[in-house]
Length: 130
Image (tube, rainbow, N blue to C red; front, side, top):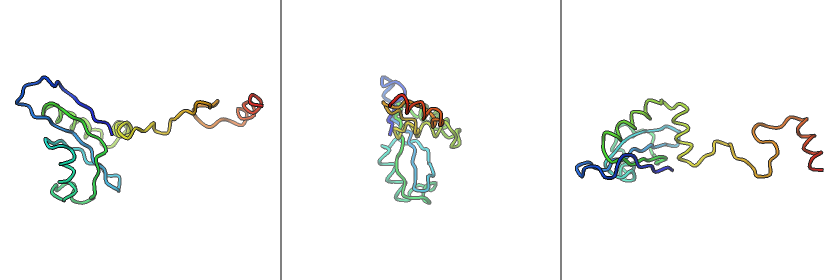
């Protein structure tokens, strides 16, 4: 899970720390929200059924969170993420949160990187290794 901090920490004292969080349930449904509580405190409220939007679909888990120095920045980021409607930008953000390489890992000894090698490449590689 990525924990990011946005905004200046030297802002006015009147601004309260805000968090953006993304929840996921077992049916791979997502909920994006912001809170002045810690994400863990807010998660408890979601899983207790205190939040109308997430009453159905419990239990939820936090899969991404970001910290902001004021409500305006947190609200802008929430609107941005919600505008993605579960598209590639959201999938990319969630993959980074999970530490995923999206299946694109490289073996240090691989000769053929990328897609599966053709039969001709396999024969050539066999000759190189032999």
